[in-house]
Amino acid sequence: SGGVGANVTLPLKQHAARLCLSISETARRADSVNTLVRRGEGWHGESTDGAGLIRDITGRQRLYVRGRRTLLLGAGGAARAVAFALLDAGIAELTIANRTAERADALADAIGQPERVHTRYWNDLGHWGGFDLVVNATSAGHANMSLALPTSLLASRAICYDLSYGKASFGFLAWARSAGAGHALDGLGMLVEQAAEAFEIWHGKRPETDAIYAELRAYLPGDAED
Image (cartoon, rainbow, N blue to C red; front, side, top):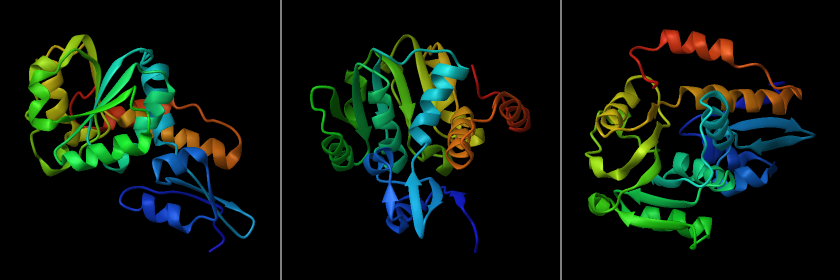
């Protein structure tokens, strides 16, 4: 009671969108809301996940996404939120692979850019390669499942990014390093940057994020950033 803003996480993002009287275009495309702000008698919804991803890669990591041939693993809510952000940031093309092929096709149809967005069967990934950027948006790491990805997926000095962080990201990042990735990154930076985006929506001022990122990085087990 009396709240004027909130940050929402899985599995409530789509539910939050249904509660809003209005949502941003970004949230509409993502079909999810992770940031709520009170406007008048109701809630307005925003989605800051995609912006957080791009801000981490291009800002903190100082890497380029523009022109990159990109593979997105997964086709759920997390994948949908970042897919639009990657395309808006200028990637050359987006290939979506999901163990349930129909979900990948549905996401590609929702994006609606057939000249840039394609789907591939998961079991056929070994026949495709040369990806400059691979984003893992699956929940496999949280279930201690292996993705069993072929090492031929990566182009030279490719970026591999797991939206998860901590132990949930270790399996994918270990594969990325063994496959010769130039950069193997977890989603901690995305977490921090999406929160900063939400803070700016609430307060009109974006906070500095380096200190909190460093503190969280020191707290997490293992080395999940290259």
